[in-house]
Length: 117
Length: 117
DNA sequence: TGCTATAGTATACAAAAAGATACTAAAGGA
DNA sequence: TCCTTTAGTATCTTTTTGTATACTATAGCA
Image (cartoon, rainbow over all chains, first blue to last red; front, side):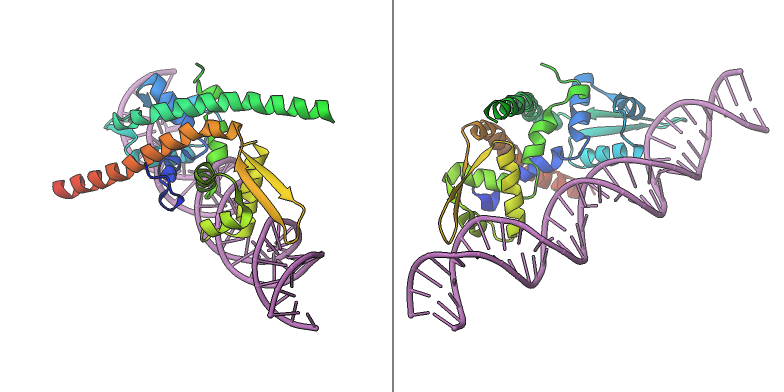
């Protein structure tokens, strides 16, 4: 496998996951399946509509999620993970697991430093 | 495993990997082992000293890399991945692999769109 | 004496990401 | 008639990231 810094493709994946809300959106859709825009918004207190729209558009652009518009009033738009998008799941799981452990690691380290000071 | 958006730990991992140069630094150190500051800099054309220093400090802060200073003039400082930092390797590999495939996926998608237009 | 190399720091600035806030259309209900 | 709901868009401001450039100390070398 090519891992030379010159042709590092980690950013290709990173770019898709990066964004304050993207991992949250993805985990939510992976677990809960298809969701409406308003449901997504309600599930993420603090996000603005602009941000949610932007992140969703970016994920759609990369073929990770699908957007289905129902021609109704008031509007109804549903979002879901694509078949292809599911291929990100193992990475998200691995990061979640590592991240959970890392929170612990930091606490442990801090305690050690307190002891030695 | 806890994957509720409310307690998403993906960012814990993401935060460490994010930064224009961090994946490159990590892959390089993982492959090449211990390296001096100047070697890192030379291997990453385009990075400024300030940026390199900053990224290295952040990785050190998270216990991913180790910094060893030799009391010499001119100075000599060596960086290497910590034992703990190695636990990120599978994630980086997975992202690299996914990212490589994703580049292909995009090209394929574009071709499909051209055909249908 | 002046030049090089090393591993930085300091300062100013530009660009990108995120946030706050106000606005839209049009159906259905009180 | 007015209010609510939905899924956005349009601006503007703030915060975070990243870049450019100049500066530092000191040993060894010519």
